[in-house]
Amino acid sequence: MMKDLKFGLDTFGDMTLDDQGLPESAGTVIRHVVEEAVLADQLGLDHFNIGEHHRDDFAVSAPDTVLAGIATRTSRIVLGSGVTVLSSDDPVRVYQRFATVDALSNGRAEITAGRGSFTESFPLFGYQLADYGRLFEEKLELLVQILDEKKVSWRGSIRAPLENQEIYPKTEGGRISLRVGVGGSPESVVRAARLGIPMALAIIGGDPARFSAYADLYQQSLEKFGRQTLPISIHSPGHIAESDEEAVEDQWPHYEASFGRIGRERGWGPMSKTHYLQEVNHGSLYVGSPETVARKIAYALDSVGATRFDLKYATGPMPHSKLMRSIELYATQVVPRVKELLATELSGRVL
View 1 (cartoon, rainbow, N blue to C red):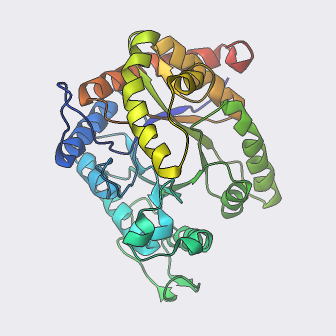
View 2 (view 1 turned 60 degrees about the vertical axis):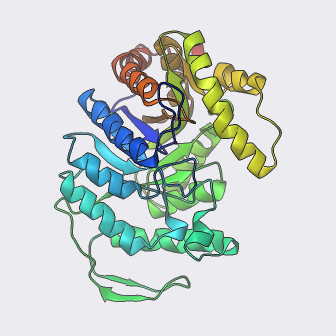
């Protein structure tokens, strides 16, 4: 049995359609995200994370600002980024913004730092893609030092040095929680272990069990660097409805719209329903009835040895009303069932 399981939700603030199929404004979508977070808090979920994008198919470019609004409407749920694109941001400002969210939420802020899966922020903020790796490496090391909330002395190649510098505001708890998002690079896994940061695996395709090698590498690297054991979490997309058929048909046109566009931009082949159903039935797309999704999540957690699952509940322009129902089913039926499955040690061997 796994102990201390945590369950959360992720959203990128996808631009949505209303119940009549008409496009909604970015302002409406952002207000909907706040309501979705409030519902998650009321239903007892552990985490709510908002991603950062700088495109017209997503409403949220400043997740910490939205999280600050959510902080004033919620009481217990941990509020995080998913992810903060650290390569094109400044670690000092990242800390200051999340320290402010931490104050507004009475200590519930969390940063997930990552490189992101899109590159629009680089030209927008004046960074070169050729510096992709160096920017993230140096900025992550600086952020880790800042989070100690002591005087910072740091030198690197990507920004002005800091000499014995205090950074404000200080948090009441003395530290903001930090995770690092990893998409499947062994180097990223080892870096997270070296810096002593909990790892969040973004598993968006294929059998989640294939990521067990990264979990093993992480634990081995933690031991090598003399670090204590740290938790691993999983981020994967999905949608929940009353039945498998309803969930599959609800999600398909919106999944096709989102990934079809991304595929065209990146030169991939057209998005087919066959590929979609392959991911639903055998991969890392958690679409189905509560029982189906619960079994898939239990299998993923067991396969990877993770103790936290964050469902990316919004993919494409699905209406807010369907997202709210998916959140409700996730919190009230899926999460209890996952805990039950893992408690009875059925896990991945017979799921």
